[in-house]
Length: 79
Image (tube, rainbow, N blue to C red):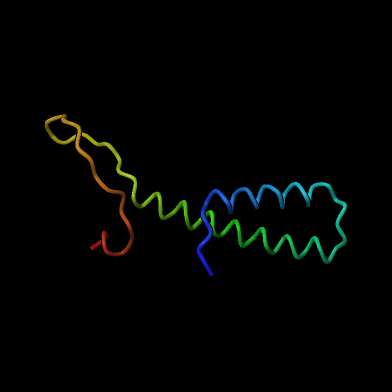
């Protein structure tokens, strides 16, 4: 199965929320799309975490010059 893109997962999550807020679905369908919403939420969270690890932050060195540092990516950076 192909990996879903952030934008598509977020769009689907928004539609699921709209459907659930209407309150017109029976309990089984509500539970089914709620579970799908949880999956979409996890996809979005994972994608945001991956993006955060790639973003560079601007910092100033001892001289006051701007330099770039990568955000820590986990245990490897803690060593």
